[in-house]
Amino acid sequence: MNKVYSGADQAINDIKDGSTLMLGGFGLCGIPENCIAALVKNGVKHLTCISNNAGVDDFGIGLMLQKKQVRKMISSYVGENAEFERQLLSGELEVELIPQGTLATRCMASGYGLPAIFTPAGVGTEVAEGKEVRIFNGKEYLLELAFDADFAIVKAWKGDTMGNLIFKDTARNFNPLMAMAGKITIAEVEELVQPGELDPNQIHTPGIYVHRIFKGTGYEKRIEQRTIRKKS
Image (cartoon, rainbow, N blue to C red; front, side):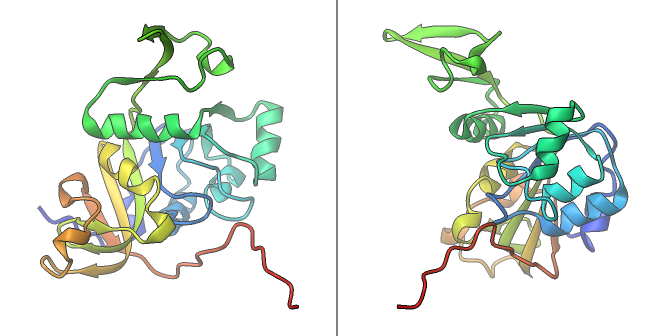
C-alpha cells in the first residue's frame, strides 16, 4: 500500500467532528506542527485530544483551543496555557488530568492490544474515584483503561516511505507510544527517504504501525521556556 501523502492537508482530511486524537510531543518538543496547522485550517470540532500537555496560547494544541475545536482534553500537564485555564474554569472544556506515567502506559497498552492496566499511581486520590481497585501482594492498584483513539498524529525526525520512523532526542517521548496506539497513525517527518536508507538498528517505530506519512515543512521548533546563564 502507498503510505506517502502529499502533505498535512491530505493526511488529516478524513478526521471528522467528534474524533479522538492522540498528539505526540512533550511541551513544544516533537509536536506534529504541520498536522495541527492543518486541523486548525480544516476547522474540525468537538475533538477529544490525548496529549501530554495542551501547548501554549499561540502554538501547538493551544491554536486548536483558540478556535474552540477541542471538546475534551486528556493530559498530564497544562500549566503553560492561559486559554486552556479560561475554558476549564468557565466550563467550556472538559478536562481529564492523569499522572504522566499512567498516560504513557495507557498509550502503551493500546499499542500492545491490552484492554487495561493496573497501576499504584492515583490510589487513594481523586484520580481513583469510580474506578476499580485490586490488591496484589498486599498493595492496592488502580484499574485504568487503555485509550481508544481514532487517530494518532506523531512527528519524527526521519522516516521512509514504508513508515519506519526515527525520533530525535527529546522528541522520542510520547511519539513512539502513540504511533503504536491509533487506529490510524499519521506521521510527519523532517526527512523522508526510500526503504533501505535507514539503519534498521536505529528505527524506533516499525512501519507496520504507520498508515500515512509525509514530509513536513517550516518547523518552528519553539522552546517553551528558555533559561540562559548570565555572562560572568
